[in-house]
Image (tube, rainbow, N blue to C red; front, top):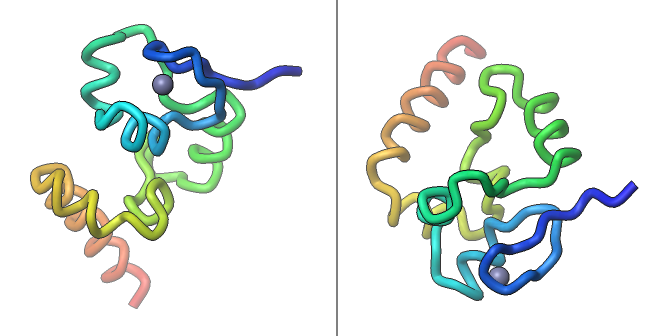
Length: 97
Ligand SMILES: [Zn+2]
């Protein structure tokens, strides 16, 4: 079963376009979705994994999960959504302790 997405800009095939968009097209997934409303950022299997590993949100994972080592840099760029995520994470931390 093929489970790859095609980049609508250049036809590049991969399972997650986040990094590809950033490096090749200097575009955030959000901008990509605005430009191509029907396009997916992650392949089916990746989305399945993400929702399975993150029971809180079907499609939203932490910046660290999504961007790895570049999480901090990207968080700085997306100030607004960071605040929301931080809130969620702080809530989680409190529950854990
Ligand atoms: Zn591309």
